Image 1 (tube, protein in one colour):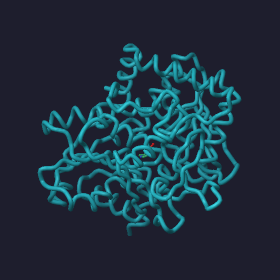
Image 2: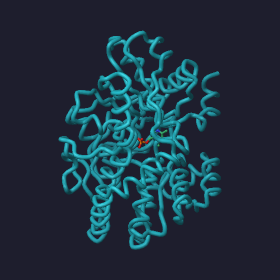
Image 3: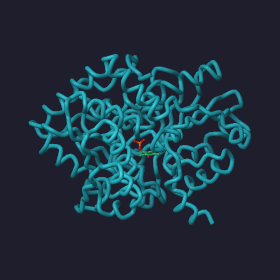
Length: 399
Ligand SMILES: *Cc1c(COP(=O)(O)O)cnc(C)c1O
């Protein structure tokens, strides 16, 4: 149920998607990444490893997640048929567990006893703590001091799951600084620690590894839509933070005639400076070990990102999305906070499904897309996670 052997054959052996990606790290650390790359390639071709992983995805996380025909939402627009891929029904509430179970199993296979992770909103931290507990691995999560205060409940969940939460008090004390701190710690302890990275970012092999573990999303969509409709969809929509749920949903369709659309967080608007739309307004530079589009000022200094959604609030973006944007194979559009909040309420009212505020960015794009579609067409929206975590905060905005 993972995607292999496509005609679309990227990244290259050095981890480049065109001019993006790569592994910009100190030389001695390059060896660690090369070893990880080799171990990952072996694991991904080992049927016993894949069977073991799929058993966990199935019995522990609840895969396959449903592909649900959203009749009310479809009637609301009166155009193309809309299907929702229900990643929100996964254990721990989002797609992140797919990747985390994969990397944690790989860590065990490589003999690691300890794992570390970075987290912003705490979702990836909770997923990592969960997988670590399940597989008997010691777990430390790096988290910005500001986020620890803002995301108190997730901090308590991680502790309950037996993880240590390491407070990061440098820089803006948020996700980007937690990434720096986790990478720094990893470089100093690489012989005994496995770094479970939370999105399709970081130096090679992480972007392709995360894509592989998340490709289960698109592989299932393909099988499910063929069963239900006998043909492929016309559009696949997904929100973009670092880009893991989107690349997971897109990958199975890379060789097909399917429109792939990523929705990034415009925040208060792409011209306001309070935005996270790195693909729309970012510049090409190196951050966290890879070349990509990054939000920065005139002097090339990384700018703090802003979005109402903590999961999309990151100044960079995965290298493959940078490549797919420039090549035109996928399209990317910014969605504002207000548009996402309206979509959050709309999907809740029409379908009884409360989406994560991240996923609401993908749902919001239907407002623009649907008038251009016809009733014969099919649109799939990836609902990356559930919105329980956002409800209290968003209700204050909706009254
Ligand atoms: C973390 C998160 C995202 C953003 O991460 P990607 O790597 O871009 O998928 C999106 N949706 C939810 C529900 C999340 O928790």
